[in-house]
Length: 202
Length: 202
DNA sequence: CTTTCTATATAGCAACATGATATATCATGT
DNA sequence: ACATGATATATCATGTTGCTATATAGAAAG
Image (cartoon, rainbow over all chains, first blue to last red):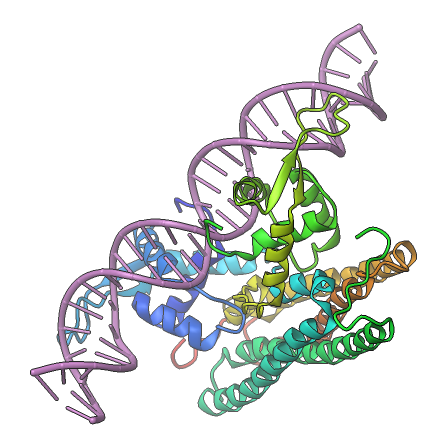
């Protein structure tokens, strides 16, 4: 364990623990399965695979069914790797530092007025509603394909998380849109078509 | 505008647009006011201040009331900076790449069982409930202190966002805890005190 | 009275992380 | 024959964090 114990390392380790995979496979899996709450880049995955191999957490195996394609490297988790994963899983999750560009823009949004802000919110709402539909699809798919899989309940928990967050977000969008439309009315009432009223200290 | 148009740049610019500040002030403000949905590190703030000064988006002014303390640099936004900020605010927010360590752990949690997982969820719930209480306090404080401030409605929108997300999270925690306690019962029913049942392919 | 602690203020660095680009092969379609 | 897209790995510039170092002033502790 040379470098820091970043979560990326254990994300990759976890994916490999489900099924021996190449770096490419890991990326595919992350995007397709845990993409709603996690992301990894090739730029991290490949160095991590090297590092973890050197640390004895995983082992590398050549090509498998290399039907010509360039050197597919398949990695599997060692017992030490399994232990390291379990140990990490037991540690309390670090509180992730928040970054919402939408909220940041909204905070400073007086500079562009309520209508331009409302546009951002409407777009966000649309996005979240689409997500909700996708989650529903994923859930039926999972329940069908992995009906008896022992990890299914845990996977469904993360999906339920997504549902709750999306629903909360949609609700907030509705509230925000109402607030913003009221602000628009007020702005018009005060006169100014373009509405840049100077008041006090800004 | 030399380097990429990262959001950090405009976060700093936005803070400076509220009030001319030093790098230290910016960090303080971010932590105290938009910390619920944004974060910045000194390691980014100081380089950005230099860069933006070189680009003419902000200007630097010596010490002000330097009562001995070491060279306090105060930065103010130029008209060009204001324009750049407005322009950025109008652009559609990029979809931020998600990273929830709690969810990542939960996804792989079969390896440590439902009780260890439930511990993480309970701790998360406690955290979110605390946040809810803090948000309520902040809201009353804001309404009192900035009752007539033209940006208040926008600030309240971001607070409301926090409330909705926290509430959604707490609801999810309750649901998750129930699921996990059912899993615990099932585990006990199947026998094994320590409950590591091998089944099919895992 | 001196040490220690905290707040103010800036700077640098190693590790972490992303997104873009480069390279190469094969399957498929046109 | 040629284009396209999926497979597969690697590298790099840029962005970002968290830690550490440096320095001073004022407050608290001994």
